[in-house]
Structure formats: C-alpha cells, structure tokens
Image 1 (cartoon, rainbow, N blue to C red):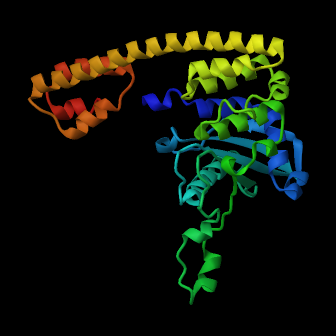
Image 2 (cartoon, rainbow, N blue to C red):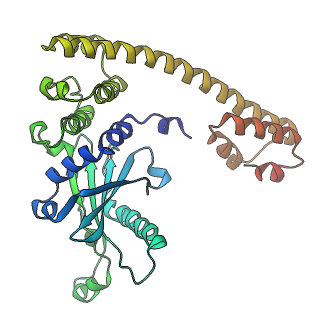
Image 3 (cartoon, rainbow, N blue to C red):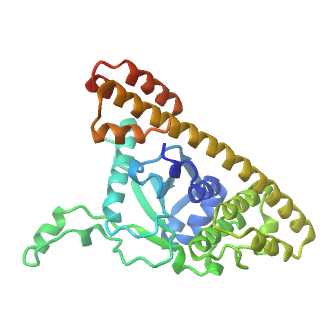
Length: 326
C-alpha cells in the first residue's frame, strides 16, 4: 500500500462522521432537494459496508453507500467525497461506472423479475476553486447537431448533485453539530482557515462528543498548522471546561503524532533497505533486470512479501521465474 494511502485524514474524518446514521440523515435531509428529501423514509436509512472506488482514485476520493426506502421501493444514496486538488471533467462517467457496480451487487442478491433500485449520486467536492464541470453525462457525449434528437434516446443519461464546499458559506452548513463542524473543517483545510472562528464555534464544539472533538483536532493537527498558532487559538476558548479538555486532547495527540512519525520512519527505513536488497540480489544473480520488474518491486509496501521476494531473487534460476512471484 502506498504511503499516501496509509494516512488519509480527509477520508477518515468524513467516514467517521457520516457513517453515523444520525449525522448522515441530518446531512442528506438538509442538502438534498426538499421534494426528494420529503419522499424518503429516513427511519430506513442504513449504511452499506462496501466501496466502489477504482484503486487509482483511492488516495483522492472516498465513498459511502446508504440503503433507504423511497415510497415503499428500494433506493440508494451514494455519497462520493472528492478531495483531489483539481476537478475531473469526466466525473459523470466515473460515477456511471460506480453506479453500475452498485447495480451489479444488488443484482447478485435480487434476480429477475426484481427491478433495479434508484440510485441518487451526490458528489461532495473539497477544493480551493469552484468546479466548471457539467454534472450531466449527456454533456460529455458528442452528438452531431443534425442527428442529436435521434441519437439522444440511445445514450445513457445521468445527472448527479454536486455539493461544493467552497461555494457553501460556513453558516449555511446544516445538520448535527458534529456534521456541521466536519463540513466546516473540510471546507477550511484547503483554504488555510482551520484556525478560523467558524471551525472553532464554541457552541458546536461544546455539543459534540469527546470522540468527535478528538477527530476534529486530529484532522487539524494532520494539516499544515503551526503549533504556536494552534496554542494561541486554544487559549482564546472562552468556555473553561472546553478549553481545558481541548488543550489536554491536543497535547496527547501531538505526542501520539511524534511517536507515530518515529514508527513510520523506522518502517520506511526497513522497507527501503529490503527494496535495495531485492534489487541488488537480482543484479548479482542475473546481471540486470527489466525496468518493469523494478517498478513492480518498488510498488510493494509489505515487508513480509519483500522478504519472500528477497529469497526468491537469491534462489531464482531466471528472471522469468522470479517475475512469476511478483
């Protein structure tokens, strides 16, 4: 697993917050069109333990799938959180592939004549700039004007709801206190505003659990925030019990972060040593090796697997035999 996918504070904060049915329900109820929100049975909302993201996007997006009843019928709410720095002009196409996977999963347990459920896709985008991308799949398809009216019914149709954090004022976020603070923090991070008043709203901070407060603080500490500036921000908290609790949590998390950084450094050093040993063994055994083999080895982060490959590099009769172990 690549290092950048080991620690994804954006992903962790979003999933920890909105995996809670209470937080998710309040978020959807307040950010979906009113007519649609009124038609859904919110008591039936249930998180599905699955993900449909392509591996190449695992470090820049995360998703949550919820089953819900829509006027006595099965339906799904699919929340895709996009936290890469630039927008994807073909987001509608990517969403279509995820929706097909959801339908395929449903079909495995519901054979014909059961109908496919409606899927309501919502993209929650984090970034510094507003998107210019169309939310309609149809706009990605080139249809010659003279025959567009003939071709259009033959093309797949999809429109998703796009919620851009940068376009939503801090005070406009609605839901539970934990959900609101999570959305404010996610909005603030790329704009370097994690120490701003909206993120440190004492009424909201006082209303959330200690676990939720810890997640928010952990997210802030994972960002590029100056420790002296954070300490100054903490000193401005007016509610003394909240200030004391927050300062204690921040001190503990900073110490944990130091220890975690030391452990990561040790593991990184061990991995780099193992990589060099495998490649060196291949050079000694076979003289040289193709670039593709080197790239495949450098993509491995499991130390135990690298140990197995080191033995294979030493014992292999040919590069082909070694490559079969990759």
